[in-house]
Amino acid sequence: MSVPLKLTLFGANGRMGKELRALIKEDPGLAYACGIDRQETIEQGMPPQEEKTLPLSEGLREPTDVVIDFSQPSAFMELLGALRSRPIALVSGTTGLLEGHRQEIRGLSRSVPVVWASNFSKLGNLMVFLAGEIARIADAEDLEILEAHHKGKKDAPSGTALSLFEALKQKNPSLRPVFSRHGDGMKRAEGEVAILAVRGGDVVGDHTLFCFGEGERLELTHRAQSRRAFAKGALLAASWIHGKPPGIYTMADVLGLPSLTNNE
Ligand code: NAD
Image (cartoon, rainbow, N blue to C red; front, side, top):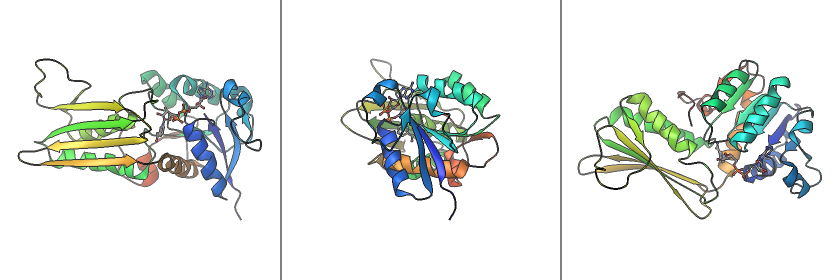
C-alpha cells in the first residue's frame, strides 16, 4: 500500500478546517500531519487531542507533503512568509486577496507548486467554464452576476463571483464590472456587468449568472449546500499537486478544464 499523503491544515480550527479534518479521517490515502491556527483557538482546545494543532512557528516544522490554507488574507501573508524559508507545496482557498498577496504567491511559486482557487468545488468550476461559453455565444445579451453567502463572510463580492466575471471578460474584453447601483442615472450601460452580493443566515455559497436577451433569459445557478464540496476539491488539488514542478496552478488544471487566469 502506498504511503498516505501528509497534509498540514492552516486555519485548522475554522469552518473549512473542520470539514477538511473530517474528510482526511475518511480517506486512507491521506494523513493529518498537523493543524496550524491562532494561539486563541488552540487554547480553546477545538480539535480533538489526537489532531495536533500548533502555532505557525512550530507547525511548519512537522514533516508534511502539502499545506492546505483556508484562513484570512493577513494570516495567508504570514504563511507565505514562513513558506519562503520552508518550501512546501501549497493549496490555498483564502479569498479577499489583493494584488500584493498575488505578487507574493507568484514569488513563492518560483520554488514550490501552488494551487490557489476562489472556488474548489467541481461544479462551481464547471459553472465558471460555462460562463465563458455563455459570454462567447451570447455576445449581444446583458450579463449580470448575483451571489449570496452567510452573514459571517468578510469579503464581498465573493472570489467566485469575480472569477465568473473574469471568465466573461476573457471572452469579451469590453465588459466592465459595476459593484453597486443606487440613485438616478443608473440605466444599464453597454458592456456593464453588475456583480452584486447579498448576505444572510448560513448560506454556504450561491452564484447566479443572468443572461438577459429580448423576450427571454437564461439563469445559470450553482448552490453549494455544504462546505464538503469545497473541502473535497481542496483535497483533490492537494493529491494532484504533490510532485508537480514549481508554478501556479488553477482548479481548472486540477479538473482538466480549459484554464482561466486565476483571479479573485
Ligand atoms: P473561518 O473564519 O471559519 O476560519 C478561518 C480560520 O483561520 C480560523 O480558525 C482562524 O482562527 C484561522 N486564522 C486566522 N488568523 C490566523 C493566523 N494568523 N494564523 C493561523 N490561523 C489563523 O473561515 P472559513 O469559513 O473556514 O473560510 C476561510 C477562508 O476560506 C475565507 O477566506 C473564505 O472566504 C475562504 N473559503 C474559500 C473557499 C474556496 O473554495 N476557495 C470555500 C470556503 C471558504
